[in-house]
Image (cartoon, rainbow over all chains, first blue to last red; front, side, top):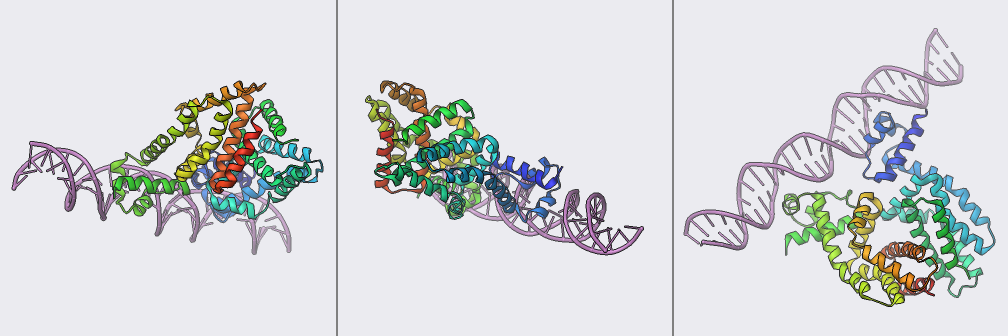
Length: 178
Length: 178
DNA sequence: TATATTTGTGAGCGATTACTCACTTTACAA
DNA sequence: TTGTAAAGTGAGTAATCGCTCACAAATATA
């Protein structure tokens, strides 16, 4: 049992369920069965712990995004992107919840995530997909698409039923096809 | 200058921008130019302060919802509901932000808001609207609609441009019409 | 004016916060 | 086996948290 990894695991669980600010380092230490001091040995401070969790999580997400970026058919691009939140949530539910929590609560974090440009290539890809589909206003269509995608991502946090999720994906896809 | 109302106003501002848990009563008192003790004189505790803010805000929202509930044409119902987040945000941006914050962060609050059934009549209204429009799966269509509506509500928090908002409303409406 | 009630203050409470540090234990290379 | 670095501990820190309470000022009632 690796204590450092255990801290990361427990902290992710607690941050996702209670929020970052509302989770004390003492509780993390207790649940990870580790002294509180060890947290600050491995991670400079509480924010450093969060950053390492985020890094790890984003690395796991990247392959899914790369798959979309490699795709050429616009309809398929849209479908895969719609599928993305479900795929992430299936194997990283807590991380997804944390991401949505931070996005919502912390304005600075939202900007960092944009400037960090982790999701920017995907954004461009979607914009081009709607151009290829000859939408009269592809930029607006992409904007509408991301609005729906955000809503769908939030929906999935509370509703995990796979069958229904894919029905929704299909229904949404229909609305963004020509 | 009414001190109680000032506390409510300042607390709403801070809760919306920093989150409930992350806002101390001492800061509220300082910004409202009031002794900290007064907060606990007027409101039993910090949560009581939050509840009064929520009550006040929901009361202001109710007329907008009643307007939708009185409408009979399904297309109009959908349009008015799509317009709802924008209307609320126009004159109660901070309250809307707080609502979205709490919804996201606090599972218990989300359930309370549902059980409280404040938004349930609207939910039924939308379901019936899609039935009237003869959608083959009106329930799923309503689910998809609320997903989009949630995403749109979040979008508006950061993007306040009125013209673009109404373009998006029109674009979304198109996707939910027959 | 006298009395009672409401409104308001600010010092101070115990609990908790993120974090430090002197120290011990473990692991590994020479 | 010995020496050194890394891993791990837990008591302790100042600061802050939500909240109380004894009291003063303002307001209402008589």
